[in-house]
Length: 351
Image (spheres, rainbow, N blue to C red):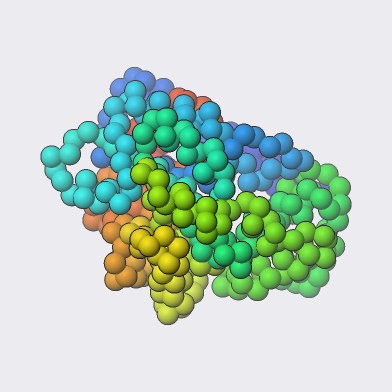
């Protein structure tokens, strides 16, 4: 129980710290402070866009925003003077000193079906281009989405047996706090060197508890036919997001290159158009390294995005294959936070 309470307080403390930082940044932005922090523009990252679906525990809530908040975010950026551009155009815009108007690009990771059902109508309403990064193993129903599988397990099971690296143990899931603590334990295992093996254990545990991981993939993500239809929309583009969604930085170079190239090949086979942009799975510094940036460059992409937070400053021009993005986080769905994030002030404060 002590570990469960510690995990609960860590999460609460983190949320309070982030909220406090965003409120401070929002105030500074309204006062017109640190205008130089904005840079040339921003790339926003989303995952799920859908009406909120309440569950017993929602450890992935940060990966989900409502269509109403997406609409509000776009309206805020319009009021702030941003123009909306396709991600593939960002490197050229960064390289053009005559481009002085701030710009914003929208990206959505993993290829969730709600991107077409709920995000697309919002983008259409405002004429905003966007890029959906497709994990081809999800589209082909050959790979599971472990973070979705784990949440389904936690919301249905009262106890769970799993090997977290020291032999099989049984953990109690009677309370929401215990479920959240268990989710945190799964997150310590992934990403990592043995990602495929850990996911295989998660999938087996799910099946033994009556959950079909690949069925969940099929329920949540777009199929080949759906992706073809989306790719034909004038505002939409598809980008590569590997085959398996494994962290590239933990793979050897040949494996990482295959993940990238085969993902692009599959999207081209689906749509007839080869993707020119890539999002590295997880996108953190140990999963998306300079080696991956060089691989993307060699394989003919024009831009690559990480999940490292930030706006598009001089570093983005120097390395268009390691671009930062700003998460529209489902835990902080307030209009003033969108303006604060786009201002770049929170990232200046983090230095």
